[in-house]
Image (cartoon, rainbow, N blue to C red; front, side, top):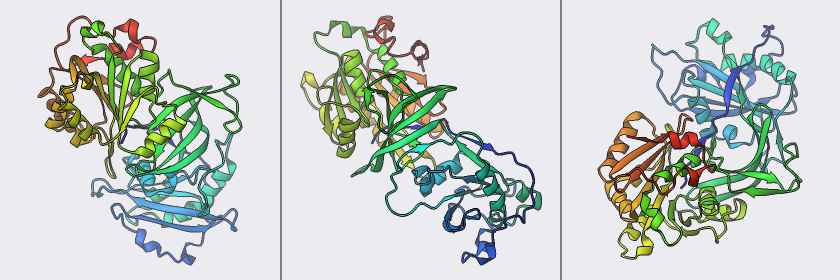
Length: 466
């Protein structure tokens, strides 16, 4: 397993449009085999999909998917409905084509009780899209389709809605930072399941674009598991197309949101690191694409050991993300079992200056949390302390489902380690916890001169003792 973060850059907006006669292009719901009366009430977690002729192009089909919130509606919170037209040529994207992706879209709309997705029905053959390009300019076809689909949305709305509420059911626009994308490979791992590797062009701010290589898992389709920056081999022209362009991997820059804060946490390694006669040593549990491991070796000179439970994830890291065997020695094993076994060794080589953990646990309702609760059991934390040198630090990526979980997690660390520090990544999801084996003095093994410009001063300044 590996840690992950939310796409973070998608948003929903309501398209403004002029009122038209609802009878214009009316869809004959009554002719459908599906009895629309089943949609009169909200049924928690119910998911139904079906196809209808496209009212603009009847020889083509539209796929309609209806998902009700897993949260029970109350009289004080009457049901609300919204619809989304799936972006053209992204119909096979797991975000829109799977129930789990649909659920995460719905959960990002906390006031919506029923979310209706409508998009072209792609065939059942290969679902590898050639290339996706974000449309430019006004999409008149989508506006026309929305008007013609309004009677369908009305028919799929709960009968508890009053007429004015039905008339106000919005069509939302899915808008993220992906300008174009191409899938390089889809694969299946024995532990993580289906995954894909894709190259994307993203807009990081107005007018500024970058190329990235990303790893995504189907079990949480709305998340990016790992990504690295890629650069055209021939020139730095960001307007080059994804297909037909050769890229080189840029492994000395961290672009995944919480990795730079994790590296900034190295500033809490004790002053004893100056006395080392060899490279400082890092143990990384949860490899993913391997960007962190490569960075620690190439940019900071660490001797790196990794642990990854899924051999297919490791293959992908080697093949697509530049994790060469010369950069890190990786064990294919369960991280907890590896850590416990290592903690019983009397060999000095089994001691590390830093332990970095990036593991996740997924839940269909709460989404992704990190770390798995099994990893912060007292015996596991004690094993973690034993594999660290006295000046060492334990750095872990945390995505708490709620404040209670986070506070309890902090208490568990305090029972085993001497000091606890925190970085708020600032994306509304991730925190980095840093636990030390012994108290920190005013000195540090990795001061600003060691870490900058590899990481921002802002993250170094954000470290707080808690």
